[in-house]
Image (cartoon, rainbow, N blue to C red; front, side, top):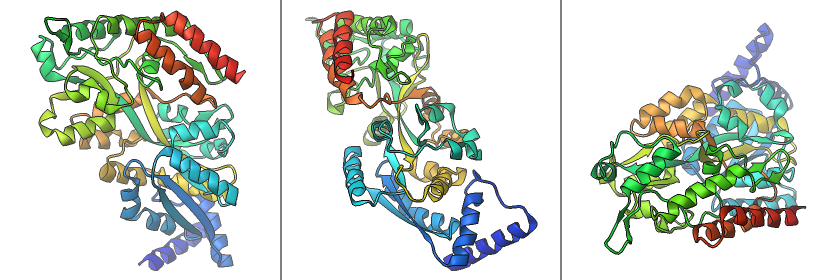
Length: 440
């Protein structure tokens, strides 16, 4: 069957060439991009195929996607390529280690599906090919969400294509809202309402100990997963990624931390580390509102099906700006590839509407194509619309080469603020100075 399909495809392309109607680059998966068509004709004439190695980070049910025929489909679409696909197990750091080893052996993959942290840290060191020339000819670009495109940019231009959002969502307990006399269908939408709800939802015992927190405000937030979105809500830049400099002493940053500490000091939240799920009060049933990874929400409902409809997802909160935290997985092309055009053909194929719809329907991945938003929402009627609203205003980790230095100084500063040891202004001045001393 595969040989027959390949033969039919080649015949079709030959006919298209004769009548002058070859497809253009950037077409969907049901078409063959122009660059692939030309390569296919040359490959057929020479009898040789171009080897393309694809590495996929093992997130977002990627192994299941491959097992359901991705390799076969991409090879059928490009008969002049020999596409090999490997799903790299482990963490993002494990994949980075394997990639560094591949570089030393001179056998880098041609296409990589990577976590946003990998995209940022490696991209700012020039590891990825700049894709502007490909993106400008890609018809699918007009269908991709603006927030997704924005996250793909480095100072030099586009260095990847966002493929799978991983948002943090604002969640709340409808039963706790009702017990506090609040409408469970009307969650807070701005900082004033958020503070008001947090206080009304907090329950303390006779000794003043928190029995039920109103809002999870992490006492440890080293990676700014909660605090950075709050800073952006308040109109703060936080990190100038163009100028590559920290702006932690920005008055808007200080004002944000004063707001969060003001609530925390009123006792609306139990101490916890946002990065350690086992410490998050909401996940332990002792808090009414929180921010969590969508994966954590899905897991919570799966393990506690009685909580479906009780634990709800609210639209993103705003002050000056409505925003949220949203991680991503990205498609990239290593700068050392010997086959950049073929690598882009594979990315264009995997980003096609048809392939993306397979992942949405079979693996539950959030789409980045506007034309598939309604598909995701229909498959997830309880949360789909709110999740897509969150992704549309989402921004991930800062794309700077010194991101680990930022965390090194911000983490202790955040803890000092929440412990009441330092004021937000004092803590941010010290963190800013420490970062600048290291990065120059």
